[in-house]
Image 1 (cartoon, one colour):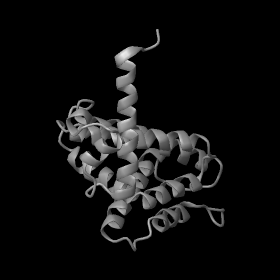
Image 2 (cartoon, rainbow, N blue to C red):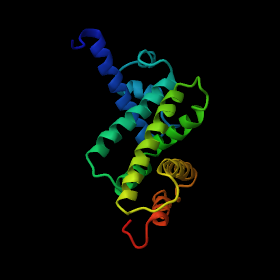
Image 3 (tube, rainbow, N blue to C red):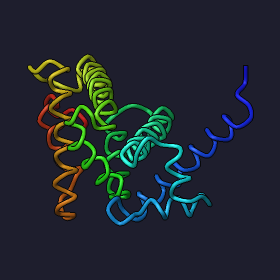
Length: 194
C-alpha cells in the first residue's frame, strides 16, 4: 500500500531538509553553517526542523548517509576503475564542508552512543568489501600485484584516503589524489597502465 497523508508529507519534508543541509554544508562548510540557515531554506522554524530528527547529530549523520547514497547512484552510472576513486577525491575537494563533517563525525562515532556510530559501523565493512572486490578484479586482470590479501589491502587504501582527507583539511596544498596514484603505481606489475 502506498504511503499517504501526513506520513508521506513528513517524509518529503525530511528529504527536503536533508537535501538543503547537504547543499549548504557542501557550499559553506560544516563549522560555518547553522541549522537555522537550513530551516530558513526549508521555510520552517528551527524547532520545526528538529521535529524530523532525534538530535542535531542525527541530522548530520543523515546528511552523510544522503551524501553516500547520491554518490553511490552516480558511481553506478560510471565504469569501475581508478578514475572513479579519483572522482570521489575531486568531489571531496569541491565540498570541503562535507569532508569536515565526515571527519568530525568519524571521530565522534567512536562513542557507541553517538548517532553516527551505527553509520560508520555499517559503512566501513561495506566499503572494505567493495574495495576488496575491485582489488581482486584488478589482480585477476593482471593489473595489480601484491602479496597482501585484497581484504587487508582494502583496509590500507581506505585508511590512506581517510588520512589524506584529514591532512588536506589542515593544509589545502596537500594533493589528495597523488598518494593514491603513488600506492597504485607501487602495486602495478611492471609497466602496466595505471
